[in-house]
Amino acid sequence: MSKLNEQTARAMHRTMCRIRYFEEAASAKYKEGVLPGFIHLSIGQEACAAGVCATLQDSDYITSTHRGHGHCLAKGGDAKRMMAELFAKQAGYSQGRGGSMHIADVAVGMLGANGIVGQSMPLGVGAALTAQVTGSGAVAVAFFGEGASGAGVAHEAMNMASLWRLPLVFFCESNRYAELSPYEIHVPIANVADRAPAYDMPGVTIDGGDAAAVYETMAEAVARARAGQGPSLVEAKTYRWHGHYEGDPEVYKPDGETEAEKARDPIPRFEAVLRESFGVTALDSVHTEEKAAIEDAVTFAEQAADPTPDGLTANVYAPAGGV
Ligand SMILES: Cc1ncc(C[n+]2csc(CCOP(=O)(O)OP(=O)(O)O)c2C)c(N)n1
Image 1: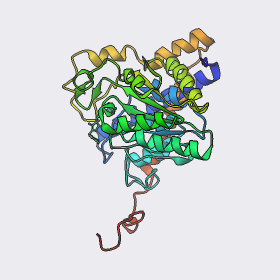
Image 2: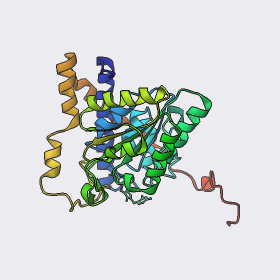
Image 3: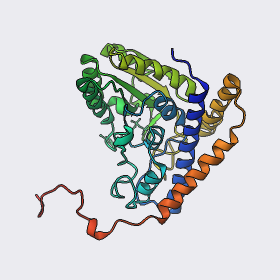
Image 4: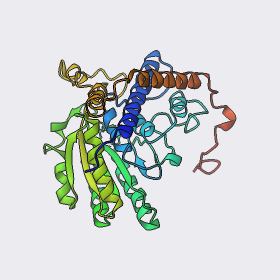
């Protein structure tokens, strides 16, 4: 097993703080009514994105979901361009046309957020097949949720990835709810990863609030994929502190559940690891710096230009006159 070292642990902690501050800022701006589209936040799930992406190289790929801000930031996406996209500004990743669920940065291997539940999995198959065919040595990670695990395409993707021994890791963020539905009313088994043997691949379920466990489990799965030994399924049990979308009244959550999860905040939990395993104590500056960087991103987005009407048909591929 690849043990976490201090340098990687510090970088992961910084990433977790960046994700937390980015999403808190997005939440605040959404409440102010200045973000035009839907946003789905992953506050509480930061250890997953940070731990997974810390095991990847720049040339590796990830495919993401509707809850993808953390994935993009952890893979090296630019917070300013992301925030500008949430504000529907021209400087955003999709020139303000797409919003939160249409953020991609191919240059850093982030192949896209995705509003179609489950589709990150076949897209991951495609990325891994590309790596296999070209012999590039790259690995792909497909993020998905336990809700997506019930989609037909999840079976197709895992079946093909296993048949072709693709360099791919399926990473399930099992965050208790799919929209408003608790796990047990749509998944008939205790763990999504228990399905892995049916695809002849290793499957493991871990605590998704434990960033070190995410890193160490993923390091092994990624090494296996890179060595040509095929795909794995990793399920991280985690929890989203906010609603399915911002504005969700969350009536389906039992009283006290979110508060209990907040008491197990993955960021201070990982700070304890940094202290106890590596003797790192001065972590306040990381919070200060990352918070300031996100404030800069918000200012950038607020001051950025709106798209102009003359760009209305740019990147529109339907034939002139319609179909
Ligand atoms: C193909 C498809 N079906 C249904 C939806 C509506 N939908 C949006 S998110 C969601 C739940 C997804 O749950 P999960 O995969 O567990 O991800 P989470 O939201 O928990 O991160 C559903 C059903 C959709 N966007 N796409």
